[in-house]
Image (cartoon, rainbow, N blue to C red; front, side, top):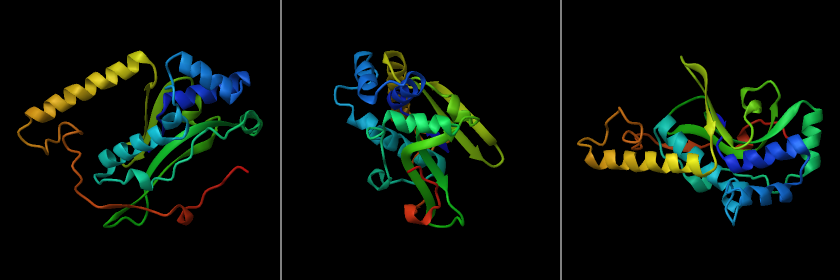
Amino acid sequence: MSGIINGTTNYILTRMADEGAAYESVLKDAQELGYAEADPAADVDGLDAADKIAILANLAFGGSVERSAIPTAGISQLQGRDVDYAKQLGYGVKLLAVAERMKPSGEPLPLSLRVQPTLVPNDHPLAGVNGVNNAILVEGDPIGRVMFYGPGAGAGPTASAVVADILNIAGISQATQIDDRLDPLLAANSWRRCVLVDQGEIRQRHYV
């Protein structure tokens, strides 16, 4: 799976791409609009996205992932010219969180997890996810490719997520069996060992 799971950084990158706005200026606007905290480090340094992809990997692959082991890079070092160069090459810049099962599979299950600014081709489904919106693109057998999309920052989406979590916690407290497979949160007990593959073993292309 791969996705844009931090609305604050996506808002900043969208403004930088569409308006040529400076990072510092857009960050200030995001704080005034309530999209970013007074201390934005968790968002702009990729820490919030790393927390979320660790949880999603647990749900998807059935094994706990050590958050501190996830390679994480944020957007605070990006400059306007980086975004401009990407546009000239036919790409958009997105802060992607990625979790994938590596081959060959086995026990413990090898996974690759990472959070990093990524050049996304303009014809890719995630390229059109702009503003404070989030999206998760899931690929697997036999489901193929499925994308889940919606707002990821602001008072409304945050309140909705908090209420949903409270209802899930209330449901868990009343559950008679913790392995109830009807609710993914109830089924999120780690039943297999997972290890993160060293990034040096993965072939990637990088923008210099």
